[in-house]
Image (cartoon, rainbow, N blue to C red; front, side, top):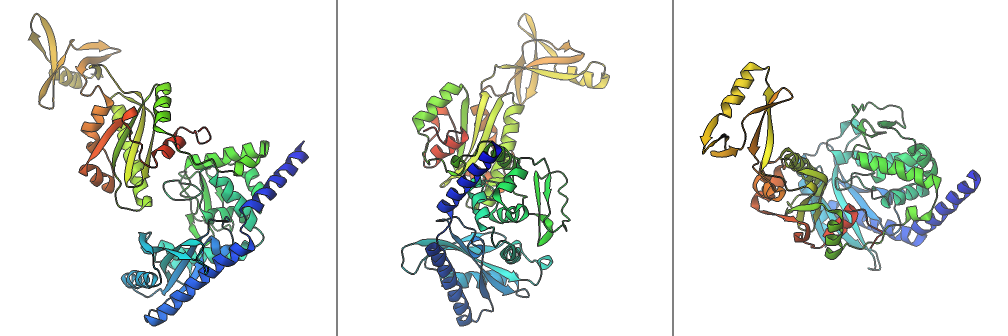
Length: 480
């Protein structure tokens, strides 16, 4: 039985490789485009009297890209003694001078994301043109991107014969939604995939080890790691060119566990569907409304204009806002089942699925233990009785208005207890009134201050991208 399963795994892997491996024609085209860009950059640098030269890095330089998904990375290398401002100015000017269509983006410093066609003009490629310092050794880095050429050199020397293993791993992760280290996804980067393939020598062997990974799994190919992690990282993979860095730092707990779970499932019941992307079909508004009604929950969306910053800056702020708003909602007595965030087009939003979204006017306020004399006196002084018709009642001073209390202070389980009027009985009203008091992050806060709306259930707007978001949120990628 075990031998039969092993043969089935090999068969599936062979079939997947035939489908995702670039053929010779594609390889030649991609290499030709990269070489053409490098030649143009080097020629233009001479013309502009800029001391710099270009090199190809990334998956296209290492033959580890999936067919049809070649993103070309070209680094423009400046001497390390060039001032940083000069590198930015001249690097961008040089990149723009060879690009007809481009946009400026920002990592540790600005770079150009451009678009180039092959010699026949049939296929368009996305190309990152990144200025960096040509430092002599990794410990002398002046910016984070300076490390990439060392990564390239390390992988090129060791990846020969393992390229197909990398492709299998990338496709496997893509189909789990955990390929890519950007903050939106928090998964496995291409460089991390290459290091894992080098460490375990084969895709299947990696899955066997991953299926047994524990919290804080540590991988150190060169055995020189200095990074400790302090128990914060689910996976630690020491960067062989920088022993103080964890290449897997971006991998979230969920992404880590999804790989473990998928590894176990595939090894137990190998199937080609593990390498097949789900059909890209958005959930409709009608399907959404029907599903929410069946769940019996309330979906609340906080919608606002997306701040004009790169996603790797924006998403950590959105996650911070999500956590802060969730805390505020629950402090006020409502109950959050799940929450999530996203950016779709020019809109950003926070989503909260509530189990409890409507509360009674009254809430119980628990005071100090009766045995603490000083605190007891303060509490009872605050909630003094007063006459109200023929009965006694109490008031609590809050926001300069009296909040009627229906019963006197009483004792429960050794503590004073009083019933007060709840400030917010509806979660939507709470969000409309108190959202800005939460910790939202600089750019998110600035955007929300310009205006936001709070929508619930059928009010939620289905602009482009929202249907895909909710399809993934509800885990129904294959259901529509």
